Length: 132
Length: 397
Ligand SMILES: [Zn+2]
Image (cartoon, rainbow over all chains, first blue to last red; front, side, top):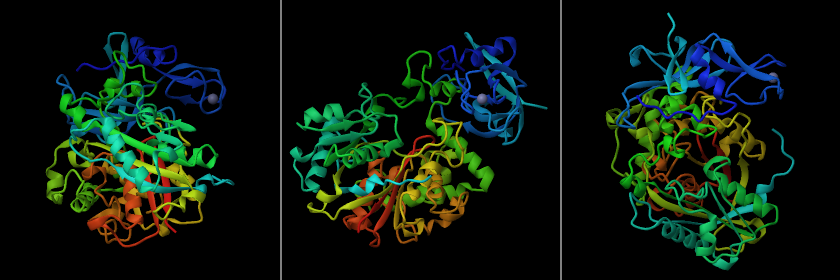
């Protein structure tokens, strides 16, 4: 499936390219020790500029999901699963992704998942598969 | 939330207007806009020269996009207006932002009569380009949007995927069922049958709902609003001059515009969204209570959003919207809380925001014709989904 890719910026490059080293990089605040997403130059929790990307486990759980059946573009392969994954490191730390590697009907809320990167040009998309 | 100055009490709605609503309408976006605006100005008993402010959400964003082909800039000269203030733009509390901004302009002394309008020509556009509304078309090449870049790489190509995530979570947390959700679409269709301007008026059964195509689980085609060409206009007037018009003024009793969460589709409370903040704010600005509401016009761009607004506005407890709408009796035209009495956007047409205000006023003025519900004095209008949200509590004394 082709994908629309993000324009890389100083703020988002670690997230979109961490997969080149097999790492899921999430912004972390040195002052309040919390992780946050999306990446930004300032910590939204405490206002500190002492932030930097940090590798997380890449493990989490499905917070919600949907099976997309609509052929929005001719090159899509439906059905595919869009999900919000909450990372194991911190409650509320989450982002939209795809669940891959198992039949769409097998996906469920709270299913444990782990990251699996898929490279498109200079972007490594963090997708998730079932964590045994 | 605590407020010690409630500006909106200085503002009232004095007239409404709406163009033909169709799929498509053989008129330009500007012509639709003029039809709606001139009808609203006349309805308020005013002349063009009386209009000294113009507000619109989202405005035309400099691209003539079918989502909003006409903004204040184009309208002012075309209609020969002389304004003391005008404003548009996407970044605001959702489809009611024009009402909220216009009311602020009046209350702050900039204007006496503000023309608020919203034009949409998505039906015409889609005849030419089926994918005109795809999220990936918002940027050319790589996604440079601060927001959409987090979704489009994962082939979130329509807002329905995001709405479906909210719906699935609501089902999971509260036990809401597809049968309950279906009542929003069924109720809107029943109401639309009595609205001569509605797009879809043939009766709909629960079987029809479940036979409708699955788009993004658990949301079906019939959970999505129907694109149309239309323009709607509302006249806001300063309360002290509003009483001189032909219509009984409909006061803006309270406004909700709060966002106490990130402007994001996935970093917010998934089952309450920005609507939660909007509802809390609106009720913090009035002595009225949810039990005083006689009718509710609640955004149904997707059916789940109506459910979220019911809860966010305290019209039912959080998590209880499924049980509240079950069977459709409570939300029917003769129920305890009639909703979307013109068929909403699901069957009436995606007039996108101001259509709800137009309908609320029509009902409060007793001009809704065959679909008129029992007389009442208080109506709530709310619009938006995800991080977008705004509401207004309307009172006809
Ligand atoms: Zn911090």
